[in-house]
Image (tube, rainbow, N blue to C red; front, side, top):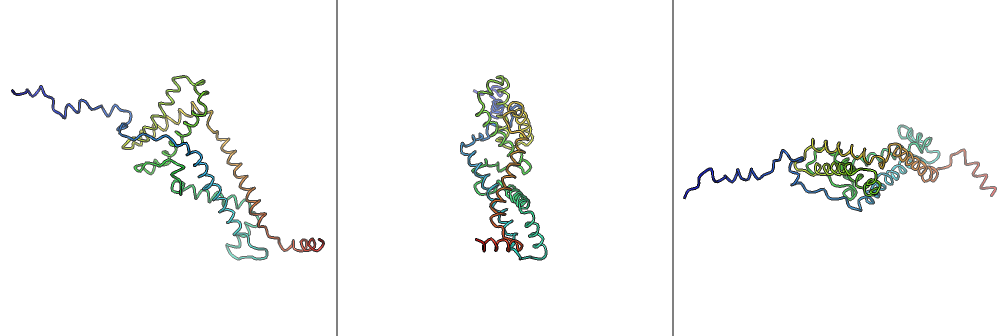
Length: 257
């Protein structure tokens, strides 16, 4: 007995009928994308230690060596560019130290993702990420970690002050950003749209819990002051060599004692 052609659906057509409409999905191939792993509880202390070493301690050591190396013994004068640099350092050691500290810190920051132990402080970037999307992708990672930390720290206040609809919208936009970051293939348009939406939602709903620009400026000024005081205490004063005009005074003090 033969089967009528119209009674049996071809396998290809049956498979197409069962397949979901990819165009209707908010993120193409989102189901195939690996989930974004939650941040490790050790990432925050590791990042703090990483920042303290690479962007404070090491630049401070380099700046101290720079100032010390350009501070010649009393009575020794060099000619040319070296002599001019030594004269500047001799007259203004603290400002020169701050400039050197900033320059070394900026040089290290330009390679912050490639420094040793960086993978323990920062989440790894996707291998297929376009070069132009590396900085926005890092910004998205920081935004998600910041939002998670704020929600965890201020959960009671957020539940009290935000309506259920506002909380749901915040969670939806953050989850949308996570999906956009993990979808394959990576879509720049979907990612940028999700990042802008999530950043705006976090700023509106959680803005009062975020650091203000004034606070960041104050912290930067305090760091600069701390660096200046440390350079003055450990470099300028510690390695300061008496000038020729001070020798008679020192000799008279030694003789009288």
